Amino acid sequence: MQEAWLVSDLDRPLSLRVRLRLEGPATLLLHEEEIALDAGEVRRFFSLGELWESPLEVQARFLPLQEALARIPPGAYRLVGEAWEGERLWSRHVLSVEYLEPILPLEVAW
Image (cartoon, rainbow, N blue to C red; front, side, top):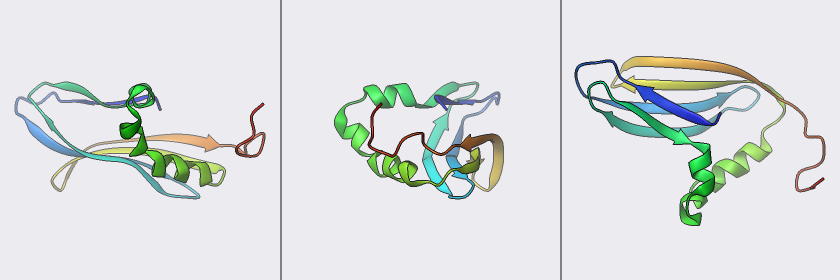
């Protein structure tokens, strides 16, 4: 996943709790954030490219997630994205992915 977006077609502002998680042989919360959207607003709230280009102190916040991703076992996973307004689920998207065994051991370049 390179980016994640929110699109509001409502005629009112709203505040959403957004969650991205990986479910499968291991479960991992990838991202959680409270986002306020104006009426009709479209906003990108996650960009892997921007994260890679961000200052080191911003990247450091994601180091525990990077380390956790390096330890997940291979297998079938679901990438789940949800947007909640209070107790109401506004959106839920699921993408099936297969994490394969690494070709080489971790920390080995080729």
